[in-house]
Structure formats: structure tokens, C-alpha cells
Length: 149
Image (tube, rainbow, N blue to C red; front, side, top):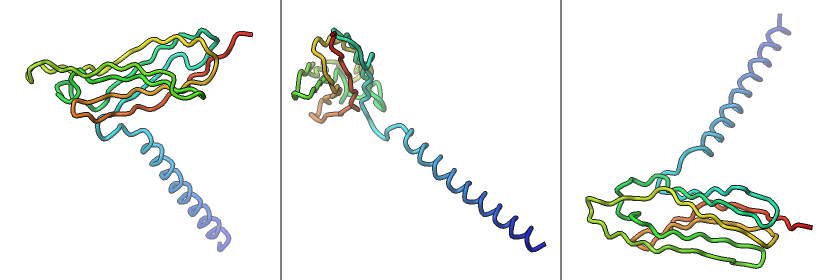
């Protein structure tokens, strides 16, 4: 009987250990997938790699912003691209909200099409400029352009 109690105790301890590890891993995964607590900018790129000339579609989104928030009414949008040689290009549209407060309309999605002719690795970022002068920086997206040989 003492052997079976020992076996039962070890088995119970193992299950408790697995439960704690499992809960910890689940908590970590849950933490990674939580939406931002405030406004955020997100960027996606498609395709992420290909032969030159490579035509990309950059898609940006504002997350956690109310449709009537005057700070984001016609927000300034800047598309930034970097390569191993440094800053390649930025394209910026300045904010200009001329609507009266009751007619404020916030654009939550942005798209830009770019064609890359030079092989290499490029890193893109979307920067959103608010009316008060602050900026929201998006995540970065890496694109690889392969030369034709």
C-alpha cells in the first residue's frame, strides 16, 4: 500500500505541475494577443517577398480610435521605407480637419501601392500624425526583393 500511495502522490504532483505550467503558458499567450489599451496603428504588407519589380500593397489601420475623435480627423499619414542603405522614402499627407465638431469623420484604414525595382530588404512603417502633433508608430514589416538573374 505505501508504494501505491507514493505513486499516487507523484502522479498528483505531476498533474499539478502540468496544470501550473499549462496555465502559465496560456496566460502568456493570452497576454500576447490582447488588443492595445489605447489608440494604435497597425501595418500589413502583401506580398512580403518576390522578384523585382515587386509591387506591394501597404495596408494600415487605426485601432482603438473612436470615429468622431477630432484628434484623428484627417490624420497625417506617413509611409516610411528603410533599406540597408538607410532611409529610402517617405510619403506624407498632412492633417487638415476642416469639419465642424459635429461632422468629424475619422478614416480608420489607409492603403498605398508601391513598386520596388532594386533587390534588397526593405522595412516599412506607418506613422500617423495627430492634430496635437503627437505620432503613432505602427509595427514594422519586412519585405525582400529578389533580383532577376
